[in-house]
Image (cartoon, rainbow, N blue to C red; front, top):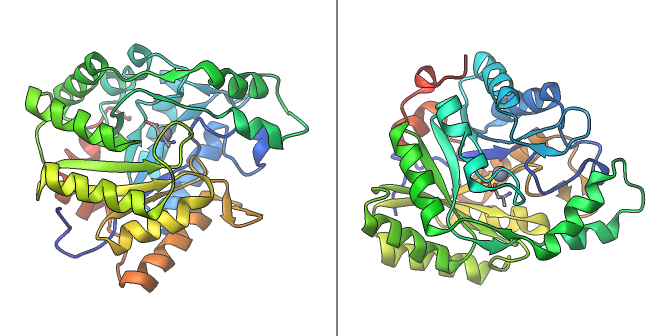
Length: 314
Ligand code: KMH
Ligand code: ZN
């Protein structure tokens, strides 16, 4: 496993995503202004990377509106030095051909890349909500009973090839142990070259469970497949967020927080902003491991990113 020379921790903040809906929390950023403000505050709190989705400003529904992506990314870029990492996962309901379009349009430094097809069952979350703000919310969540989040080998070849063409470094999102073997296959096929930056995702309904033993197993499998040519970060979906990101930091890995993956700051208490979650993982990383947040500059050097000025954000 590769580590930054300083030993610092890469904190990514995923500010809005496509898992939660507006009725679940009044603090979920939805409009471009809200997303930009939360991203800037998260970066000031210690996030070196902002993982970015956009939503319909009127209804909060996840969309792949490239004008919205461009507007939000440009405004964050103008105010901060943070690394902006648009999603190519979009929403699990969106086709890969639609999701990949953000790469040529924004020419970003990084993008997410989802390493296999899985069930993505968001529907149990609908049981906890009595009052819906918008009709699309229950329909969207309940539609996931029959949904496959599609990332076939052909899709991966296209996604990774498009990223390579635009000098974009992928954050390789692995939702199960099998996705590490999918990634090994992509390396063998020549679709991606190490070093690799992995994002382990635990706790999605359809992926590996949010269990500390599973995180250890993901890391030991990655060690055996990729040796010294990979680094990793961890997402714990829902209530496992801080347990698993703290474990990741203590294992020499990195951490992703944000309202995309978890709406809470602690049990029973909604996070009032993304920055609150960033502040919490900054404190935990220091407490458990004496590690400080890496700056965007350090991360650019470590991951070999092309730099904010080489993007098409403006
Ligand atoms: N919300 C994460 C568990 C993507 O945007 O590419 C999945 C994710 C996918 O971040
Ligand atoms: Zn995402």
